[in-house]
Image (cartoon, rainbow, N blue to C red; front, side):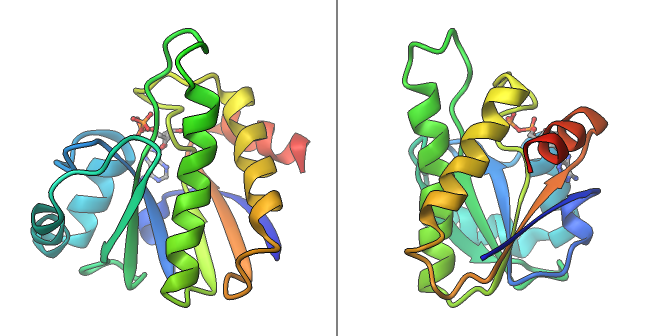
Length: 165
Ligand code: ADP
């Protein structure tokens, strides 16, 4: 599996599936979630309403609507409290579950945002290490997925990912 890091807006990326840092209600909101729904149009929300809810650490897939990527995989990251609320485990689970859904849907290229590192307050360095470790550990189990792109929106995350890679 090829792993890449880029800086930019995930809604502009053309891959097979982009991952959304959603909330449990799949209700849309701010940050990357809002950007994805704005760019993808109402079809994505309609598909989310049919699904209902998604527990923290799990993932669901919908159409990408008008986005350049045909699918959105919505995963619900943990809200950071103090590190004792299974935050690390739940964040790792987001990356694992999203990759597993990508595999089942024959997605060759998948783009991830930096899940939980915005409003949900997860420490960025710690989140990046978990993201990279988890994706690398899963790479042997997801043969359909040939490329994972970490799309960093802020310069701090970009620098952290560059230094870890
Ligand atoms: P969470 O609630 O999981 O913390 P946020 O959307 O607040 O989700 O933030 C997650 C990450 O997504 C942050 O690092 C933020 O900088 C980033 N982000 C915000 N908008 C975009 C976008 N359009 N493309 C890619 N990443 C984005």
